[in-house]
Length: 186
Image (cartoon, rainbow, N blue to C red):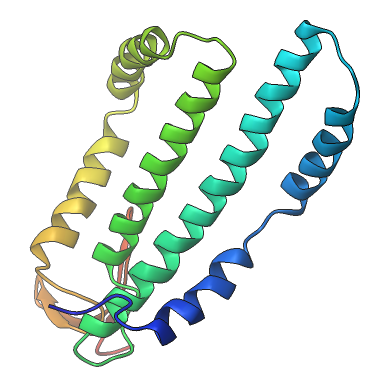
């Protein structure tokens, strides 16, 4: 099994990359909130300031986790790649996208819950709306699942030579919506 960050040198190289994704907006919000903390505010405003603290801290934490997902997944896929250079595989893209999607959905639901919105009721309404949207745009989920099938089954990858209907070519790009081939004739 391949190590993601086995020794202290790997961890030491991760920290600057992750902390480098610190947002200037969250730093400004935190600075303002520190200044506001000195003030003697009514309870109503104090609650709003607490919500802003949660928002600033949660946003920065989500940004750090997002960067961690990118860095660790790139390291992992680089370490398991046969040729050492091909890290832009469909599986890499899909896995990173799925992890980031889950991260930001959890962040959004936490933020909504923090400001007093009933998150389970909100998710239920999204489920009903999601069904309506899925019926309206049936081709897009179909393409997404077809792309996921290519990523998981790996019938071909970038650089493979394939033959389709008597035309032979090399796979140049495998994306969510399209796969580009370059015919041997150019």
